[in-house]
Image (cartoon, rainbow, N blue to C red):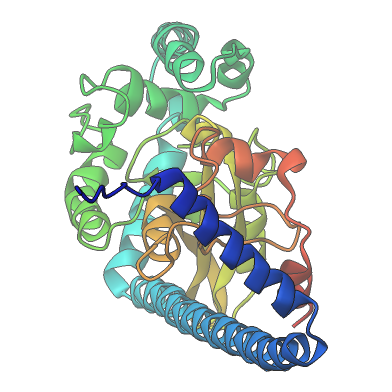
Length: 368
């Protein structure tokens, strides 16, 4: 006889195994003791896992908060150091006899420029016409390029006094250097006492400005408010900060504060804001009186460059992808760039009241 072996059916074997597994699962599920043991084991594990998560999360939050605190402290110290250094530089110039001499030379040259018919009336008239052409042409075009809007530039020119108009004609209109580089002219070579003083002192003050990264330096007569000298030669040059077009600006206000103080160590700050002579770019000012004995004869003013402060405050090292530091003024408007508002530009955020920052952190900082 031949024995016959029959192969087992794989499907049948699988079905049998599945059945056994299901039977075991049913038995486990219907066994209260085993189910209780499982629950007793899982609950502590879940609690331990949640506690570990909370501890780790709290540790990360603490670490992040500590890191932000360190960054804030470092940034604050850097900003304080910048302004303290700028104050020292301003005081140094305000107390420098050469600066006092420069103020007198510019003031006397300014007042004598038009006096005693030194310049014929027809020449003054022609100079003003050419200056008006510059305002309506090159200057207005530059303003439109930077602001995407027009301005009644002729009104600004018409408001100038005779001496201011003639000096702007010499040092801005007839200056062959482009807008933004008018400071490169050392003298107008018109043989006036003013231009002699300019040839002597301008290279020194321009060198100081460039060395310390300032935007502009102003010398202003305390009595009249006349801006008798600037390094950068914008359209505030020659105007009066008591009665002129820019008297009601941060520059005008900080001038009047300094002109009213006979304290030798006095320094006054003006808030950053849109400044028309700089094509409405944000500008901040710091001023100190120039004294002769106890009498204030003039005021020296620095126009501060916003990019220097942005570079300090806007440093993102250690801030990750979402952290940032920025400066806020008492009006709750931006004083520096926000890294998340780059598409708007600092002029929009600083000058636009729609972008007030009224968070709890800002309120606490201003209250303190």
